[in-house]
Length: 392
Ligand code: FEO
Image 1: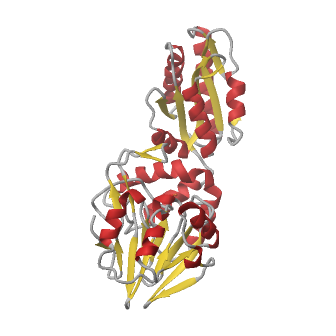
Image 2: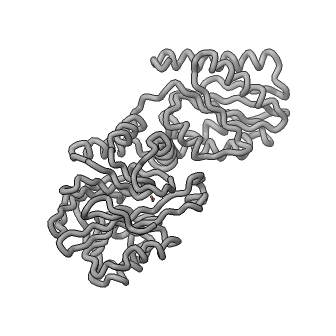
Image 3: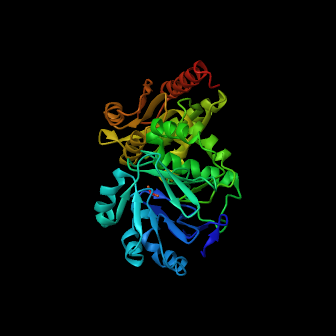
């Protein structure tokens, strides 16, 4: 995509990746993504904000073709999808100074081989003049690495937020034009990489609230010309109050666990609880991560493989523990052939989930009336707990 103006001083010079389908060899990208970089010019002075994923180097350098001199390359984050081309940009512009947070300095040297003697570190709250414009740098640790910072272009009221407020969405429009579509993409993105750091993000939101933000320009996805909705969404997502929702990742080898999940889903729905089952035969973990952002309860459905949970279930349990959602309750149901240690195994895998473990329901073979009644009792207990929290 060619350079596109945000205003008279700022252009988007990054790349859209329509075809990428997996990030970090983990996160599905059903709608592709973008690696946004921005060029800021004022009174003959020029700054580039971040680079792009190295796979898109030709796009970035084509967009910089008419740039004769670069004064500053500002790196908000050391992860390679934004920093990977820093050495090449510094080589193309030998006069440019690389600006980053003190913590990012060593990371940029280690991760991408940035030249140490080209780096200027900036303190939290420090400003930098560029012609008639002023950047204010705000350290925002743990969105989602420890070195991350954002910059605020005072005169334009633009917040350059890097991963913060980002979304994996390839679209031809520079600005958000379908708020509900991008809202879902941003929620997925939050669940996938930001959710473990809710407390830090809450503090960073508080700090940003002091700024008069007219526009948010992230490093993935479209620019927010009206940032109110994404700021409100983040406030909601980082809050400790869950919603009346149950997420049920499950797998079934011979149908027993599926019967139990069906009974659970029907009973919960009858209580007015929103329930989202995810059959792990074919799972989009981005959708699961998005569902975990609001859920009050997780119920894991698994048959025994040998004596432990099915490996695909174990993988999702591991991920849920790593993402640290705001769950209040965890349930386990499933079936086994001759014996199992599923409950102990899952409990040992989830030390980060500060949630009450509800009485598990396990069936030896096909669930009969007693086991299905126990599943209904589990659903009743979940609904009662949601009601006690005022969620229903
Ligand atoms: Fe988009 Fe943390 O990199």
